[in-house]
Image 1: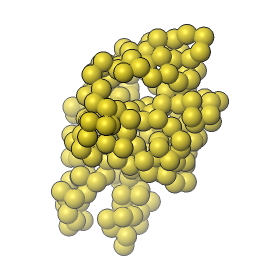
Image 2: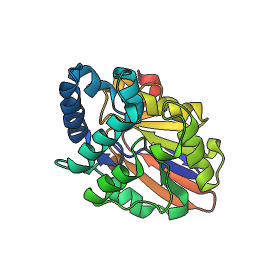
Image 3: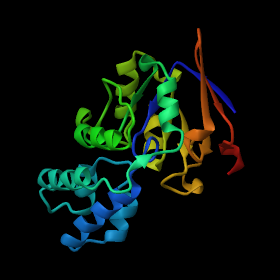
Image 4: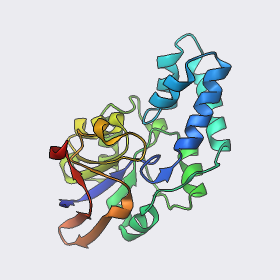
Length: 222
């Protein structure tokens, strides 16, 4: 599968960094502390800003205070946080002006996880701190495209959650999904589904970026 674009926007957790186990540990501990359904929260916290998850599942709590607590727990729990296969090689192959990261995590958490996984991060990127409305709103990805100076239709998004896919599509971008966090059948709104970034190669030319995906599952197959 060959795609062309001017720029790439990467989600972080589940796309560049495997932090699923660490995140679920934190959310389960937090849920148990507040006598909430830990399984439900652990399943549904991915791809959203933590403050929005807290507002959804525990509207009676002080969301800002609890968000600070959850973030501190997530920064502290780095056990098992590693780079997704192919992430390091792909990031180092891209011109810095042609990609950025658009994550629901805070800036402090995103930088901690990228650093722990040994991945480079761009000087400028979009985090949950930079938006009013997090994913599945289009706002994060529209701000990411604007940051790079490219129109949305010239950008391709790599995402791993239904909320993130919806955000990219709502922004008018093409989306490639990774089945690292959710099963493939929940990701079929994306243009294609892959296992990891090890399946992705990028050539750079005068027109922009030429993305070659070796084993993509096209949307039509689902």
